[in-house]
Image (cartoon, rainbow, N blue to C red; front, side, top):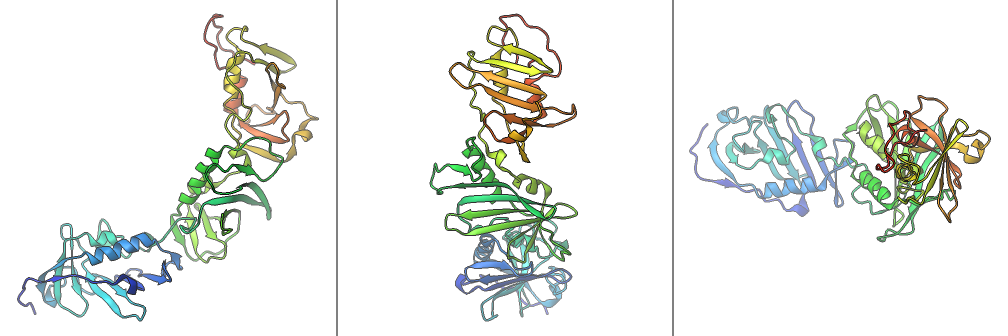
Length: 423
């Protein structure tokens, strides 16, 4: 029956220290259960994945700040206000013993900026002017939505509790064999501590900014969803992270029909990761070499020789448009795409490079770079550098900036040097 409506407000009082479980459900949709274990929260209905504690804290604070005004009373009004058992959302905040601290039904339609609610076991209908659905992960079209478990899930690939990274490794599984791609570490996490490649054969310096940019991507990476009913998880690549305390997190990746699957070692939770996120985390030692690794400078005292098809061209400041300065300027943009595994510069020494560049500066040992453009369609070109044991791969764009595929027009002797050079 509809009774007389009087001025009345409902203020939930939730002692945060007592909250142990939050249940959120709606008929016809999957339920959501948030469970507190120690000081951490888990999404029990999503394989126990760690929950976003900040969102749960925000929800509790939103409930504690709620001021719901009595608007009507009577079971015959439930459908009108979308708070019937068949339509409404059911929200329960329970203590460790399973007793309800708060238990109410929330309307499945918005009323302006707010919603109507009714307390379990009562027929009073209240209006909450606050956007309570948003705190529960519901935004537009709540009349056609159910509880959103992913809203509360912590989808970060690296746990929030993980401290600063002191060592990291990346690896791939090739023909069932693990192949290390990168292993870098620093003596401490103190500001300014240098990173180094663990493989001592590397002689180039590490770009600390490159390492920090990469680790920022790693600790900020998020999955898109939680995978269920996985038929097989075939480890195809992995990443190991270790912090200063010695704590280790190992991320394992497996190819899926669309994107990738990822899980932490010894954890049952499997994340779904996009191709973009996966590719952004792939790295090898060569990617962290400092920019301009040969430490060239724009100095017209350089002399440069380009050697191709048995012909040597020498460029100096006095050589017109094709100046040594322009070539060195192009060479300063050297970036390594990767390096060739299983092959050393010594192995390639029996095969002359197709193109060579020799940079000569008074008082210094000449720097020689050999390129192996064995196919005109190559986009990644094997490269050897004097004094280095690795065989690197550089981009075709970089190669073309040194050995231009077409002859540029001649320039006046006093013109500004052109960065494109004729081979």
